[in-house]
Length: 216
Image 1 (tube, one colour):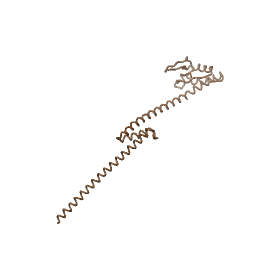
Image 2 (spheres, helix red, strand yellow):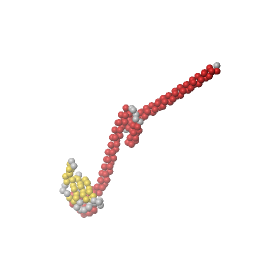
Image 3 (tube, helix red, strand yellow):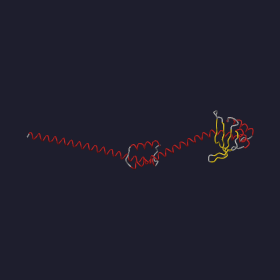
Image 4 (cartoon, one colour):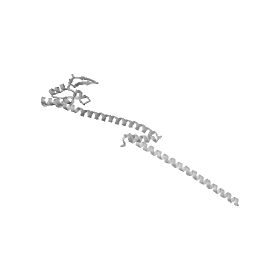
């Protein structure tokens, strides 16, 4: 009887060990399943958000700056999402951002050119004003005074003045060359100044050494 009791006890212990082991295995499998389900849910959430963000960028529905759009795109690409719709959207967004980058570069260049034009206009304005004042002088004496003061802007009274009468396909047709002093006296007699400044050359002291005008 004693042996029989020991055998039963051993069998009970073995059964308990088996049950515990099976329970542990089942628990381990459950944890792995939960982890897989969690990973899948996170992946699907990334897919949905990626589609949403990429579509918003394509349709200009965000207030993101270009660097922010590029950063978001890089983040989405880092997910390595294996979804054809997302892949197609990435390609389209990449092209769109390249176009935006080109447009920004063109706008910067235009602003730069405009700033240079404005600076040039301000720089040339004193030349235009002084020559216009000579042409509009009420008397010869007043015009002569204007001429005397204006000549200080030029290196010498013999600075060449080149007058373009027409230009076509990069070719210029010039009037007879003259000098600044002769041109100012011409304006004094003509009583009008109808020219735009094409170019100006200066020496190291900032004095004008050549003036190129074009008839309006």
